[in-house]
Image (cartoon, rainbow, N blue to C red; front, side, top):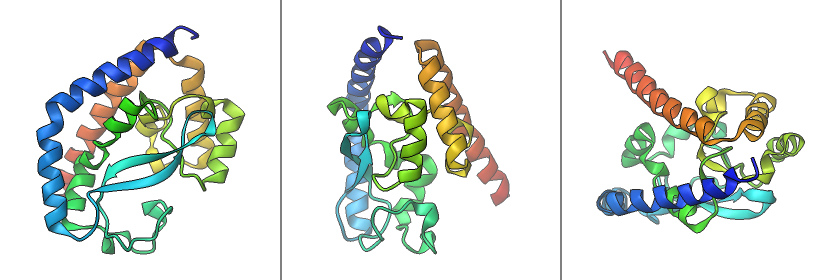
Length: 197
């Protein structure tokens, strides 16, 4: 447990650097499309809670109009679809909007696997995570709670999954979460394809 976090940070940097090396053409293409599609910046920055509850700004490709209310989770907006841009719908379906978080990982703000970083004003989630120690580690691009329900989970359940991750953090557990995230993405695509049919 004490040794793995050091190895984990090294693995995060190597994997993020390698990903950025191969994915930069996609970054460039998406940046151009976002700029053409709607007014506003290419990246969306939002204040989040990092390791030891230190704040950082998470990066995403902008998927919503620039006049969207800030610091509010999308699912809490009255009519979120009205704010999402044309390219934004595609980016969200494919999770490509999350790609810029590779930069957060390179900077040392995040890990590939870990609890999803809470918004600075999600006080209930932050408090629950205090109880299980998951505010003491790097937040992740995806995590144990993410592959077990994401935003559909109640706060207490989500924090419980995050606490379970802290207790069992290891290379094998990270690999399991990474593979399950891949399967979750495939299931979502198949479900949407079935709905369309």
